[in-house]
Image (tube, rainbow, N blue to C red):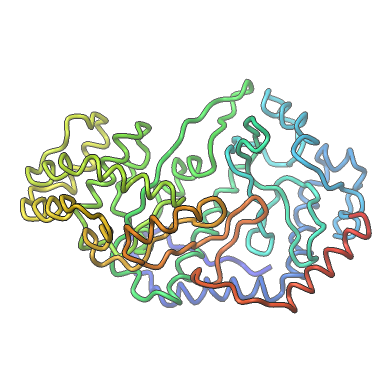
Length: 409
């Protein structure tokens, strides 16, 4: 299958963004244009690598790697059908139950089902086919509390590379609609969440916490698209107050450099603005004096923030004036005047926050760079404005789904 574009590990290398973006877009085009063939190849690779795992042997796949046999033999299931297998892994069973590679950790809070057309995985081999034949889906990550309790989904070490690949495709797509995204910084409010260990000693944590704590994030090579106002130390701080305060402070200190703002979810971004409403006097005091609030006690956070924080009475006075206004309408564009858009997930239940975001941003474009839900997780092909109806595609999917379900697959 087509190979994904690789980033240089040398931070001194000029990225030649135009060429880099073109390669990323070409990769997306190649794997989607030939999606059916890519799906066949990827599934065959996965089944070949995992031919000896217990799950496939239990169902009698017997080394077959073709899609038709896989769909016929491997059942469509729900989490509870493999819960016993997952519990064995959680309790320390290291035999190849679901995957030939060692399980490195469990991911929690989300269920992602990822398109094979984008990422070559040799992960869990669970038949969720029953959709269009060109969208062969498979279990990937984890779940939230849809069933009233936490669910665990196993993952492997090399999955981080594929996750990083997916993230690397976002900005080349965005740059088609928004120019000069490499000319400034992104102010993103990113946080880690608590983690636990299973009886077998494996870490169980949310997917984004896993990514932020990985070397793929912490030691990422320089890229203007991942040039954030928040130092890694502020993102990785386990204390939510210290993390939020320090990220906001760094974002305010670099307000003229910020060209995009966001968080993972709309609710998280609104929470940051509400935090600013409550704590702007203290933040202004820090900016005016060039000293950091003593409530920020994490040594690594203090050291990282002090590399950015310098005495700036003029900026502090400006922020104080804007935040002291009775109305906070447009506060984002007032404090960060070069902002081009707000990057947050506003689909599903997050759509309730759209009016609030419009109020605070003065109607800046709201952009979802990924389409993520319990059913799929992929790069958006365009800035989220409208979805153009496509009756032919809808009819094709409906026909293929009906055909597959009619076969009992």
